[in-house]
Length: 225
Image 1: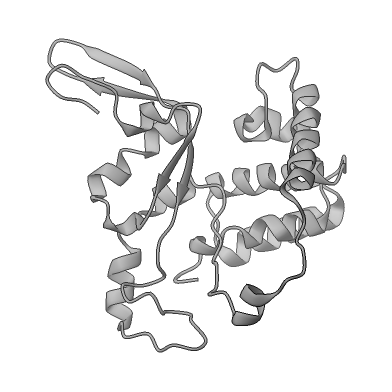
Image 2: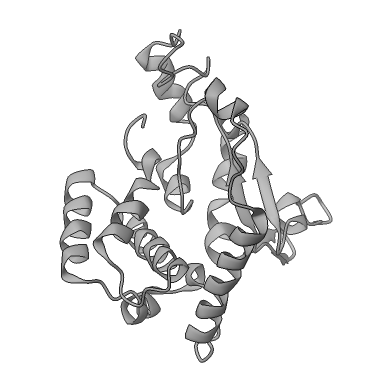
């Protein structure tokens, strides 16, 4: 957005929806860094000499990227043609502060022929939708007096109130923070994701398995996967 007469940009057009960025490292660095504030605050402020205008920008960010410029780093079958320096430069286009603001990072390996040709029916979208709706209903009930609607909106006070961990889960989270060097922001996101995983199976207390799964969703916090 912006301009001499400021107009809303892509993140405001995606307000209350999804913004999908394909080939994330190919975007200009300044454009990516500009995402940091609205991802946290839900709005974007465009400042000009005479005034400042605020546009709504509460959106779900979904981004995709290759593991390296040639696309074959970590591939078990094909050889990567990139040297370590080239991979580092490519990955370095996505800053740590931006990655910190993305709740879930997962690696999707190439699909094998057996999986493509498998005729076995998978879980239907309607079943998955029902499970998500049940989870959202739990969260609406939980936060009915807090002015929010879902786990992602929890602040530090609400995280402490609603993210109750069993003893084994506390020890696992402590070990993950110490060994993997997660940031304070990543710590909050792991707890929010763990709370959601617990909600999906109707569990009131966060268990070690939920923490373990949430930690696995922070793959880009570790160098080059």
